[in-house]
Length: 150
Image (cartoon, rainbow, N blue to C red; front, side, top):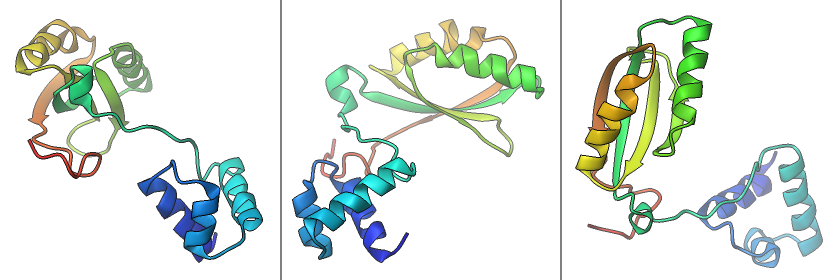
């Protein structure tokens, strides 16, 4: 990967709807060279997909909470059981297995604090092997929605 590939990746990260013609002009290479490079980046897995970033408020998910989770058991089976249980919960948008004081960080999106409270008591607390948790309420997402100020 060279500087031009890095520029292509940076442009696509900022706006995946750019046409290949626009990208080729921006990085200063021919359209066919740009197409080859993008195809190679996709085939090698450097670019693993394209997605739309949706404002969660429009989906009724105006509150994002990051939950730090410690498991009671740190066995391979305990970790797999936890991952399987949380993967089935639609309110959980992302799951990270981490090293440190906590075992997982999960990103939860719900309508409001009452919905989070219900999720916490009715869903999260009932997962077998769940130990200590700590909740961090997101005030804003400056990366995904930099222009939105609420």
